[in-house]
Length: 511
Image 1 (cartoon, rainbow, N blue to C red):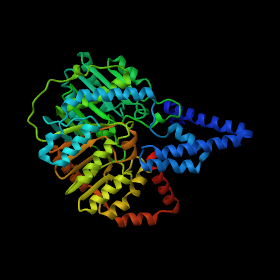
Image 2: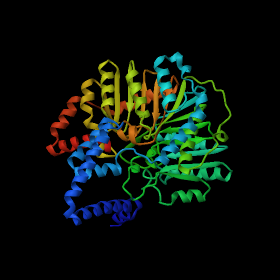
Image 3: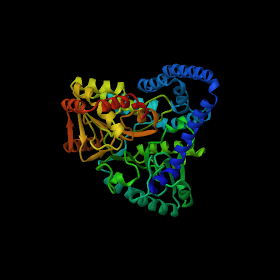
Image 4: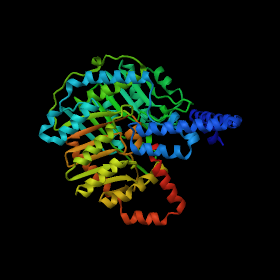
């Protein structure tokens, strides 16, 4: 009873009750004014028809369109209204103006660093990828940058603590999930020490990502300790499309010279201090040198938007340091509000241009037609395509959809492995001993089309071989899935589970 009460009276529980109340009021009004039901019915039908037409004509992913059109056509009375409340990525004009200002400022700050032609020695594929990210995401490619790859959360955490202690000017953190425990408390202790030393310390966390992890007033507690804090997209008890767009980025910036990103949030399961779903396998990357400045600008543009202030970015620019480093590094970000799926495009380009192999780790395999096609075409063309997914899922419904995508990939020659020790949360891609990507982008609709994401694309750096080696070592403790195994699983399913999996797959873009 105590557990149920705590869930009901938690902010998320109260919000859920409020949302249910809004729906109940709508139903009651419909019944109360039943004599006008025919008018109400035809108005809703007209709304739904207009919404379907809007969905067909807009620029969203085709599978996302279908996932909404089917329920709207099945339930035309409320389907169109539901889409208007929580579907799509519409934003108000004020937000559009703020985002346009952010883009102009980011371009002005980073455009002098553009130089995709520097990758000429690595061929047209490398130059094309770098040029795409510079043109579309406004994110330059850099030399003079060291990278270090971490294939376990524990190693990542130890290095992060070490680097945080070295901070001299500022520390910026932006995370989807923060949870009190060994990991966050250890970081927080350092942050408070740095505030006492006069450093500028700032934290951004996503409200929904941390809603069951932190107290409602946690941002106020951080402010009281001298840590400046902003909460991304606060969760309010109103059905709204704003619930879709979450800050899934994971950035740790130190003095504009050192930066971390990857799949690792600031909670104890990510370092296996507590066990959830078996061993938690995750990854991250350290960037030190010129490219860290680009990641600093990413954070500052988000901070400007949330705090509604204008920062002088030059105050945070570190002094240039020439480093003799092999290869190139290109941090990038993705926003769901610009109709450009940058994270997906990085992956599509890497897969389509792979000559010998492409290895992928992802916690979710909820892919659209474009991703399925490029994976199958690569495998059919003789490229060694391998994917590692979890064997122990964190979300059972998403796991069902992940497995539903296996058969066509296996038929095309893609090799799929499930990480048997537990849950793999790493989002990595490596190809041809030359290119790699590490970041926050899952192979699913939310990462590609709904969330704010970030990543680092690598070309010719020593860490590329580390990422490949980590994949091969992870493959050794994973179970390879075969087409016969998937057929046997399908035969052993009851009709209801087969139907349930089909429904889940058709609604996958909404998950």
